[in-house]
Amino acid sequence: MPSPRSSRERRTGSGSSRLEFLSLVSQRSPGAPDSPSRRKEPGSSAAAPLPEEDCMKLNPSFLGIALSSLLAIDLWASKRLGVCAGEGSAWGSARPLMKVIEISGHGVPWLLGTFYGLCQSDSSAAREVLLNLLFALLLDLVLVAVVKGLVKRPRPTHNKMDMFVTISVDKYSFPSGHATRAALVCRFILRHLVLAVPLRVLVVLWALIVSISRVMLGRHNMTDVLFGLLLGYALYSVVEHCWLSPLSAPALFALWSH
Ligand SMILES: CC(C)=CCC/C(C)=C/CC/C(C)=C/CC/C(C)=C/COP(=O)(O)O
Image (cartoon, rainbow, N blue to C red; front, top):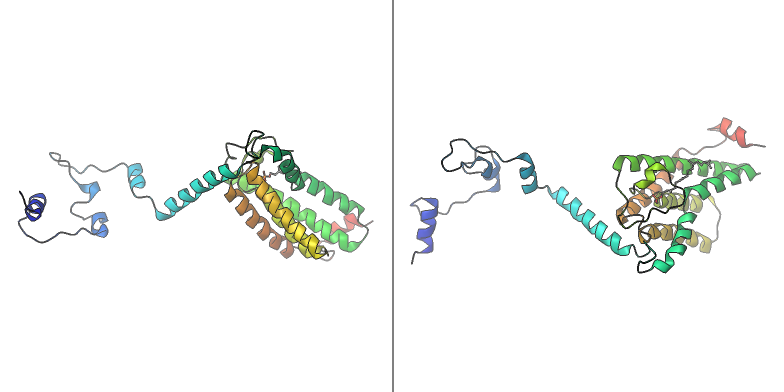
């Protein structure tokens, strides 16, 4: 029976008893003696290079693996949480309630409500706040449309496209427009409306429920909603930075003064 040592010697073809080590660096360096892409076929004189796409599959980056794993988990978990995605889903009977919550965070009632309030307001303080809310809502609409148009992530396959008033980019799901609006409006109200603590808690709960309902209705994956919340939160800071006042935009305020 051959000893382990003698079989190794036969494989390496060397008579020496020393072990050979190949570091990853030496395997990948162009001058490496036996790197996979340079190995010669027995009987052929030229090295056969591997197709580029094969190399990419064999050496995926750590970031690539982490990202595709995160997306796979996102798709799997979002599908499981989409319990109101259809009438026949696990919580299908709660779908009508989820759709009411959906409308409470929709752009149309918020834009029309703010516009109406602006026309009715008789104090300059109310006008200033409502004009800035209108500006914030329009900015949010544009920003979400631009990101959706750039990313072009399709909505989850289990989503039924039966939403109340949509625009063309709303066939895409990243980021969730409802989540950005919920975070933006929530921060705006907490900052500019004098409310009792229970009402402030209610506003935060509303924003969270609107966001969670997007995944439960099957409209979005979780990452769409999480990014939407972050975007809406950050957008509020932009609005505050560009705050419109009778001093900074006198023409705009003259338009609304009766
Ligand atoms: C009243 C004023 C001043 C202007 C209205 C103008 C206007 C362009 C309104 C469009 C509102 C609209 C259709 C918004 C889309 C809301 C929506 C369906 C978002 C998608 O949310 P998602 O969470 O599913 O991404």
